[in-house]
Length: 134
Image (cartoon, rainbow, N blue to C red):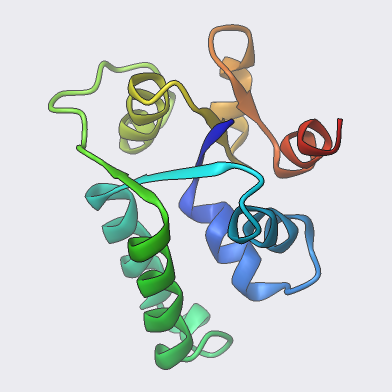
Protein backbone atom coordinates (compact mmCIF):
# COMPACT_ATOMS: atom_id res chain seq x y z
CA UNK A 1 0.00 0.00 0.00
CA UNK A 2 1.20 3.50 -0.83
CA UNK A 3 0.33 6.75 0.93
CA UNK A 4 0.93 10.46 0.60
CA UNK A 5 0.94 12.08 4.04
CA UNK A 6 -0.26 15.69 3.97
CA UNK A 7 2.31 17.98 5.64
CA UNK A 8 -0.27 18.59 8.39
CA UNK A 9 -0.04 14.89 9.29
CA UNK A 10 3.77 15.03 9.33
CA UNK A 11 3.71 18.10 11.58
CA UNK A 12 1.22 16.43 13.92
CA UNK A 13 3.56 13.43 14.13
CA UNK A 14 6.33 15.68 15.41
CA UNK A 15 4.08 17.56 17.83
CA UNK A 16 2.63 14.47 19.51
CA UNK A 17 4.95 11.47 19.58
CA UNK A 18 2.17 9.14 20.73
CA UNK A 19 -0.66 10.37 18.49
CA UNK A 20 -2.09 8.64 15.45
CA UNK A 21 0.08 10.57 12.94
CA UNK A 22 3.22 9.54 14.87
CA UNK A 23 1.98 5.94 14.82
CA UNK A 24 1.65 6.20 11.04
CA UNK A 25 5.23 7.43 10.71
CA UNK A 26 6.37 4.52 12.89
CA UNK A 27 4.44 2.09 10.70
CA UNK A 28 6.06 3.58 7.60
CA UNK A 29 9.51 3.26 9.15
CA UNK A 30 8.66 -0.36 10.00
CA UNK A 31 7.87 -1.00 6.33
CA UNK A 32 4.10 -1.41 6.64
CA UNK A 33 3.41 0.97 3.78
CA UNK A 34 5.30 2.94 1.15
CA UNK A 35 5.43 6.68 1.74
CA UNK A 36 5.30 8.85 -1.38
CA UNK A 37 6.59 12.43 -1.28
CA UNK A 38 7.62 15.09 -3.77
CA UNK A 39 9.79 18.17 -3.72
CA UNK A 40 6.74 20.41 -3.40
CA UNK A 41 5.43 18.41 -0.43
CA UNK A 42 8.82 18.50 1.30
CA UNK A 43 9.18 22.24 0.61
CA UNK A 44 5.73 22.94 2.09
CA UNK A 45 6.63 20.84 5.12
CA UNK A 46 9.94 22.67 5.60
CA UNK A 47 8.24 26.08 5.28
CA UNK A 48 5.70 25.12 7.93
CA UNK A 49 8.42 23.88 10.27
CA UNK A 50 10.01 27.33 10.10
CA UNK A 51 6.87 29.09 11.41
CA UNK A 52 7.62 30.71 14.78
CA UNK A 53 4.74 28.91 16.53
CA UNK A 54 6.19 25.55 15.48
CA UNK A 55 9.80 26.52 16.18
CA UNK A 56 8.90 26.80 19.86
CA UNK A 57 7.89 23.11 19.86
CA UNK A 58 10.09 21.56 17.16
CA UNK A 59 13.79 22.40 17.20
CA UNK A 60 15.62 23.22 13.96
CA UNK A 61 17.80 20.13 14.44
CA UNK A 62 14.75 17.93 14.93
CA UNK A 63 13.09 19.40 11.84
CA UNK A 64 16.21 18.93 9.70
CA UNK A 65 16.64 15.34 10.87
CA UNK A 66 13.03 14.46 10.10
CA UNK A 67 13.19 15.98 6.62
CA UNK A 68 16.37 13.97 5.99
CA UNK A 69 14.57 10.77 7.04
CA UNK A 70 11.72 11.59 4.66
CA UNK A 71 14.12 12.35 1.80
CA UNK A 72 16.07 9.15 2.24
CA UNK A 73 13.21 6.77 2.97
CA UNK A 74 10.20 7.96 1.00
CA UNK A 75 9.59 7.32 -2.67
CA UNK A 76 10.35 10.72 -4.20
CA UNK A 77 8.00 11.24 -7.11
CA UNK A 78 7.99 14.05 -9.61
CA UNK A 79 5.58 16.86 -8.87
CA UNK A 80 2.60 16.92 -11.22
CA UNK A 81 3.19 19.69 -13.78
CA UNK A 82 -0.16 21.45 -13.59
CA UNK A 83 -2.52 19.76 -11.18
CA UNK A 84 -6.20 20.17 -11.98
CA UNK A 85 -8.28 22.35 -9.68
CA UNK A 86 -10.13 19.89 -7.46
CA UNK A 87 -9.88 21.19 -3.91
CA UNK A 88 -11.47 24.13 -2.13
CA UNK A 89 -7.86 25.10 -1.35
CA UNK A 90 -5.93 25.28 -4.65
CA UNK A 91 -2.70 25.00 -2.69
CA UNK A 92 -3.59 21.38 -1.95
CA UNK A 93 -4.32 20.35 -5.53
CA UNK A 94 -0.75 19.10 -5.93
CA UNK A 95 -1.37 16.59 -3.10
CA UNK A 96 -4.43 15.21 -4.87
CA UNK A 97 -2.58 14.98 -8.17
CA UNK A 98 0.45 13.36 -6.51
CA UNK A 99 -1.70 10.73 -4.78
CA UNK A 100 -3.58 9.98 -8.00
CA UNK A 101 -0.43 9.86 -10.10
CA UNK A 102 1.23 7.46 -7.65
CA UNK A 103 -1.92 5.40 -6.96
CA UNK A 104 -1.63 6.22 -3.29
CA UNK A 105 -4.02 7.00 -0.48
CA UNK A 106 -3.95 10.65 0.54
CA UNK A 107 -3.87 10.94 4.34
CA UNK A 108 -4.93 14.35 5.61
CA UNK A 109 -6.61 16.20 8.42
CA UNK A 110 -8.00 18.89 6.10
CA UNK A 111 -11.78 18.70 5.86
CA UNK A 112 -11.84 20.05 2.30
CA UNK A 113 -9.63 17.15 1.20
CA UNK A 114 -11.54 14.57 3.23
CA UNK A 115 -14.72 15.69 1.44
CA UNK A 116 -13.22 14.19 -1.73
CA UNK A 117 -13.37 10.65 -0.30
CA UNK A 118 -16.14 9.68 -2.74
CA UNK A 119 -13.92 10.64 -5.67
CA UNK A 120 -10.56 9.26 -4.59
CA UNK A 121 -8.85 7.36 -1.78
CA UNK A 122 -8.44 9.95 0.98
CA UNK A 123 -8.37 9.04 4.66
CA UNK A 124 -7.92 10.56 8.06
CA UNK A 125 -4.85 9.42 9.95
CA UNK A 126 -7.08 7.19 12.13
CA UNK A 127 -8.85 5.75 9.10
CA UNK A 128 -5.57 4.87 7.40
CA UNK A 129 -4.16 3.37 10.61
CA UNK A 130 -7.29 1.22 10.87
CA UNK A 131 -6.75 0.03 7.28
CA UNK A 132 -3.20 -0.95 8.13
CA UNK A 133 -4.50 -2.91 11.10
CA UNK A 134 -7.34 -4.43 9.11
